[in-house]
View 1 (cartoon, rainbow, N blue to C red):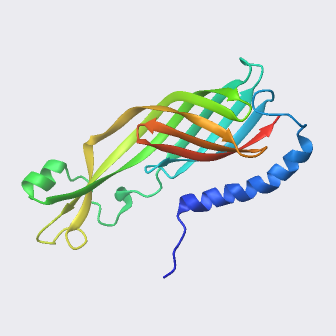
View 2 (cartoon, one colour):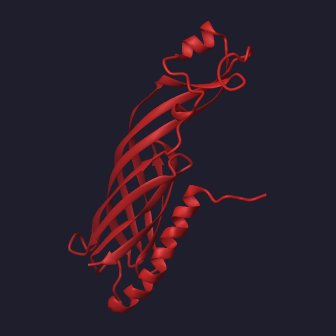
View 3 (cartoon, rainbow, N blue to C red):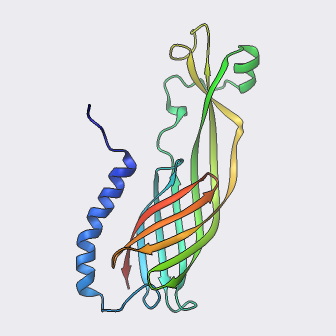
Length: 207
């Protein structure tokens, strides 16, 4: 059996591979003793919300000129696979039609997410920066049903959009950046909408 790596694993390995030569170069260019609290940094990276959005990108800026080491963080995260793209998605079918009119059995649910966030960052130690902020999230909810007659969908299984479960959300997020190497930061945190753990890697270069 061949085990294929997930898309998130591939992205993390790619960023790690980019970070290794970058760290070596930065070690030569960055003066000794330079760290998050006394230097300005600009970073870009890959970030996920587990288990909801496995693709995302962030931008980070920190400068010691703001309160001894503060800045801004922004990210965008989104899902890449959607029940709306499933060949057995039935557009225009409501939850009432599936459950009441057809009497089909509810089987499961899944949501697509798009989130855009902005946060304030403050460096509390030379190797640790904390962040907190808010953002906008758009949820598109779907439901899967089973048709006992198996005349609809794939052997009776099909998806529909749950319009009542979809909508715009306000997201709150918080977490921290831990400096693993001169140019590599590990991000860990949590978010409310969608609820999940934030994990990422950021390449942060001193200015």
